[in-house]
Figure 1 (cartoon, rainbow, N blue to C red):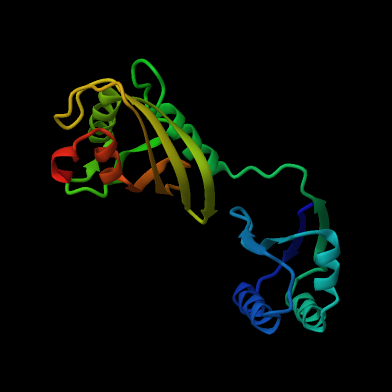
Figure 2 (figure 1 turned 90 degrees about the vertical axis):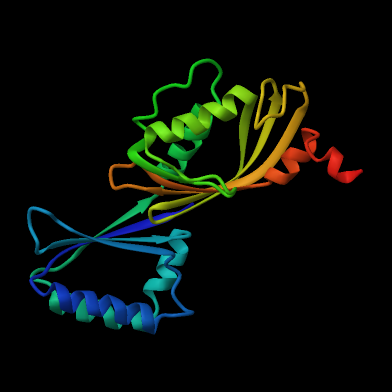
Length: 235
């Protein structure tokens, strides 16, 4: 079970505290068991800092605390604080990757049957969609909807999320796309064929949690082959 420690302190010497944290990271390289650290400053009180440190388990956190470098840095941190810092130990019982969940909802929404639902709760109005083909990027909500409708007219489809990695404001999703060719697509008339395509999309999120930008990579050539568009070339 993941374990999180909250360190709550007050200091008027933020820059020195920041440099001290850099020192700890450098000195414990290859030894520390912490996997993620975030430091937040109280918007209403600039002297109030909260550090959130994540560990694979409580036992790993205790091993990290036992490092001589950690003890030395702790004593220096106390000296920089206006009062004794407090520690809160938390076993993580729920961990939501919210950006990743938004990407999954986005893929489900654009594949939904019937009329394409509104996307304003998912995408920024000036959303920029990068595509791997020679076509121009779709810039803006309306342009993306037109691109999306082109695919929806040609296919009934669904996405299966195979892998997802989130870091900072980016989420990378590897997906499988299964579809039935029901209508004209790039001049290819409906064939009723079942087709499959694999690919990835990287989404960049804005501070309000909406998707601001997307980069797609997928096997378009393979799709054309499944639709029979390459048959003449192979003869």
